[in-house]
Image 1 (cartoon, rainbow, N blue to C red):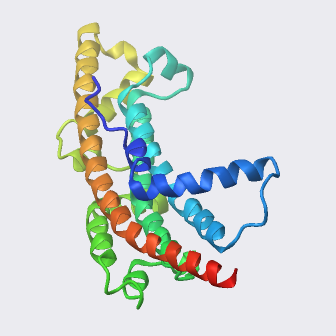
Image 2: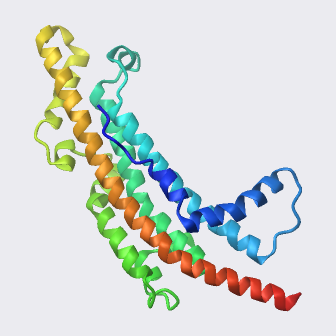
Length: 258
């Protein structure tokens, strides 16, 4: 039922920028937990700030993978009945979580740029236009990366906003370019409340339709996350250069003071 799916969160943690940052930050975090750390210097504070900015981005990809797994590996009808929900309720819930998380990556990317360049923007003012037009950012490759990321995410921004602000559940037919998924919602609701009106062979046909739908939905999620991951990977690659420059500057300043 499940197509091959990239472990997207794990792949991002293997990025040279992220792995080098984690290598520096993890010991500080572990030592802090057992009170074995001296007061942090400017380099430590910079790395910890970036750790706090990149971690939510990594976690979002892990949440996307989790939502994909939950959406396509639906529990038994017996289990769902105990929860008073049907298969389509389960499916819509996890696809909704997927969409909300997907769009959130845009904000998290902007906050990461804010931290790498030490722009000092308040998170609520950390908008794409503000970041891309900043004098330290606008002549770099970062605006192009943010534009690429924004184009991928923009496909679902309106759907996500309708879901979050108006509680409008997205049409699966519209999302996937399908023709039968929304009708399955009606059938699932009827099966949940009046199963006796469906002969056994009809229920079997519904089961088969859902198996096909889960495969289609899993493939759609995989493709969308793959595009998103590629865009974020490129952003991390370009940010790595400026991170290294900032570390060199901080190290040089620390040496001058010493």
